[in-house]
Each structure stands twice: as C-alpha cells, then as structure tokens.
Length: 355
Image (cartoon, rainbow, N blue to C red; front, side):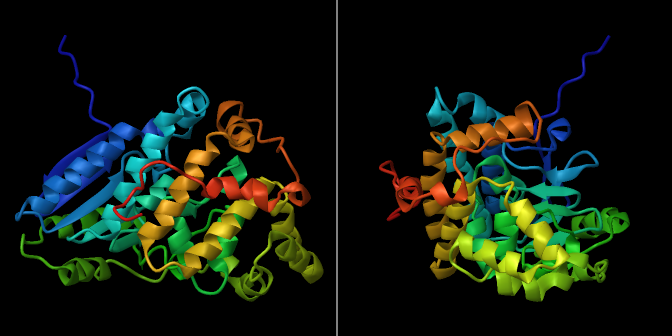
C-alpha cells in the first residue's frame, strides 16, 4: 500500500504569475504556529525576488475560514515555564505583519469565513483585501484576557469615527460590509465567484501591476449585503469617543437603548485589564505615525502578558475547558495605572532597528 505524504501546513505554489500561500491547518481553523509564520516569511522572500511572480495570494484551506488567529494553546501551555517560546512566536509574527504592509508586490488576501486575531495580521495589512458573504471578522482578544495585537492598534484607530474602538473593546465579530466600512477590507466578492477570481489572477502576466490586480477584482466584485451593525454608528461614535473605559460604560448606560444595553453587557464580560490596556494602546496608535511603532508597543505588551493571570484564565475558559466562564482577577475599578504600566516595559531587543 502506497503511503500518502502529509501536506505542509503552508502550501506554497505558483499559479501562473501568482505566488500562492495556502494555509493548511483546517482542523485548527488554520491557526498560525511558528513554523507557519516562518514558511510564510520564506515564501514572501522567494516570491519577491522572482520576476515571474506579479502578486501574492493568501487563502485558507477548508471551508470554515482563512485563519482563526495565532496558536494560543501553544502559548498557554508554554507561557509560564518557557516564556521565550511565546515571545519568539510574537516577534516573528509581528515582523511578518510589518513585511506584508510594506511588501513590494500586490498582496491579495481572500478573507472568506473566519478571520480573527492573527488572521487579521496576515490579511488586513495587505494591499488587496477581499471579503465574502461568509466573512466573520473579529479581534476578540479582550474576551481571553489579552489585547488587540498584530498591528491592530494601527489599523483600528484608522477606521471612521470610533468604530475601531468599538471593535477592539467588544471583540465582536462583524460581516463584510462592516469590515469594509472599518477600512480593514477593500472589496466584496461573492464566494461563488472566488474560483473565477483565482483563475483570472492566475492568467495575469508577470508584468502585471497593482492596477491589473485591482481590475481583476473589480470584475467580480459587487456591493456587500447591508450590515445591521452599521445602523448604530452614531451611537458607537458618541459612546466610544472617551479616553477611559469608565466613561464609555457610563455613556452606554445613559443612552439606555437596546443596543447600548447589549453592548454594555458584552463589555462587562471582558477582562477589565484587557479593556483598559486595549483602549490605551488604541489611543496611542491613533497618535502614531507608523505601523512599526504600534507593533513595537504591542510586542512589549505581549511579553508582559505571559505573566498576566487573566490571559491564562481567559484562554482556559475559551480554548482549554471551553466553559466560556472566565473568572477575571480584578474588576474595572481595581485596575490602576501602575498595573497597566508593566505592559509597556520591555528591556529586550527591539523588533525594528531604532525601535
């Protein structure tokens, strides 16, 4: 009997003038581990140097999504005894996020199905970001005692109004129209036309430009279905425009609408440390002039997270035991500036030269 060779976790291939990256851990919703990050980085180097490659395309195998995030179970299991493993994963992941944002060729991400956390990092920094009617987009980190990372503290503050603040604090998953409104995606392509788009991209010549890639996407794109969430933009902008979580809570309580009450109830299930840290980083990101400055700040927070009990409790409740009932270490009123300050201290080597 002939033995079947297992496929790699990132399938790297050429489709005409397109360099394809196919994330291939479908049973884990294509969650990223360090080996996958390194494979993506090596492929980006290969494709960038190859004159026969006009653009890069990233997709997820399976029918559930592009990528559900980083391999948080690995960090949970190694964090206390081998914190260097989690730190190394985040370091290399963030460097790839930065590289995608500055990539010298068109970078096309098919954001079909679930796109969360680390999946946002390998898609929303790209030049051509495509969503479908199946897209469920989120930065859900406050629900696991963590905070928005992978450069989201750069991306979310650049959404219109306070929509990015809302997404970062609530961790709510949103649809295609909301992702496009937030400037986290560019084009809506019905899932039934994805194969047609892949074929059109594969027929591009090696001399194809970003404009040619955009034209191929426009040919199969359309308006996304309306998003019910966007009906509440005025309320979101009004209630999430404050610089403290307490003021946001008070504004939602004062509004009193069904949406405000539901949003406040959701926020109260999140880690208080995560809420305050995320808001602080989002406000700092709003004032930043580069993505790399935000990634550097996030990395310091990541390293400190490895000693944060809320992180382990949040992952336990969401991923390990799956009881969805985390017991956070402190309430909102007990989170002090001194507690938050440790997430900004890091004495190791910077991610970027001069960082």
